[in-house]
Each structure stands twice: as structure tokens, then as C-alpha cells.
Length: 120
Length: 111
Image (cartoon, rainbow over all chains, first blue to last red; front, side, top):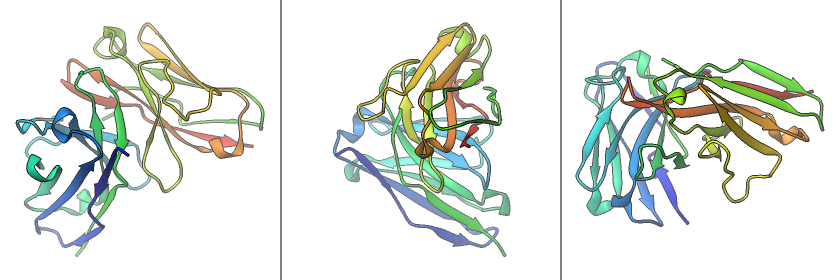
């Protein structure tokens, strides 16, 4: 079964750093891009960026460029999303999702989500 | 920022047909990029519902169908059921943003 399993919920203070993970299984991890999607409380889906795990080539949405870092370790089939200094406005659910090789492709499957809460 | 516009909500009685529109522009849907649809049940992760404008993944009932014309796309649900109550999002690629865009989302309510 193809699946993406994300790390657990996090509660952090403003200014702290954080890295959350997304582990793929059931398929060739380096053959599919991994995307990250943010969903703020009660809001819609926002694409943050993606990574090609085969060479760690990364593309960011202009809205998130410079605010987060996406990386991957293909040896353990895991992608990461990290912050160096969290803000209260980073409080959200974060999903990873697999995309096929074509730019035109869809996101499937999705991870279960990681809830990040940033509060003093 | 969402560049694909959807109605905030649609509703229908059980058994009825509802449609959800997704309006884009010449840099995304109108440029020929495919539209995909996702269903997000309350408290769960989004799930792929329609891919490549009008294709259903295995396991998705044929009550769900998609179409695309010009710079817009639509999702239709026929024979509406209580279990269809969820949020629905369209998604495409945008060449001016060099990235992916989602619709604003539509909440479907079964009366």
C-alpha cells in the first residue's frame, strides 16, 4: 500500500525552530515529488512548495519562499519541512502529498497531517 | 492566495444533483493545465476525487464527475448522499506563479 506517514503534533513557542517529517512507503520514493500544503484553522489549502527526492531539487511558492525549508533524505524515504523561527501565524495543519513525474499531475496520496501550534 | 474561485457553499437534498464551479484564468486552467478535485471530510486529510479533469481513481463512486471548458472546470455530484457532506477543492498548475494553486473551497451540505 502506498502511503505517507507524517510526524506527530507539535506545540512550540514563538521563535523556536521545528522540523516535521513525511515518510513514504510502498513505492519508489525517488520517483515522485513530495509537496507540502498548509491549512490554517478553518481555511483552505495553500501549496507551499515541493521537492524531487532523487536530487533534492526544490521549488517554493513565492508566499513561502524564505520562511520555510523543504528537504529530503532519500536513504530513509523521508521528506522534511522546517522553520528556523516560528511565529504564531505558523499555527496550522501541514500535509505532505505525493505528485507524479509530470507537472500536470495530481496529489495522491496525502499524509494524515501534522498539527503545528505556536503559542507563548 | 487562491487564484481559483469556487462558490463558498452549495447544498441539496438527498438524491439531488449539485455542481461546483472552479474559475481560473489564462495562466492556469485556460492555459490547458489539468484540473484535479479533492474531497476533505471533516477532520481528515484531503483525498483525490477526480484527476485529469474527468477521471475517477479506483474506489470513487461514479456519482462524482468532472468537466473542463476554457478557463473553468466543474465537479458534479449526482444522487447526493449524506456521506458527501465535505469540503471540495479544485487544483491546477499556474505558469505565472510557477507552482500549484488550489481553489477557495466549497462546503457541500446535504439538507
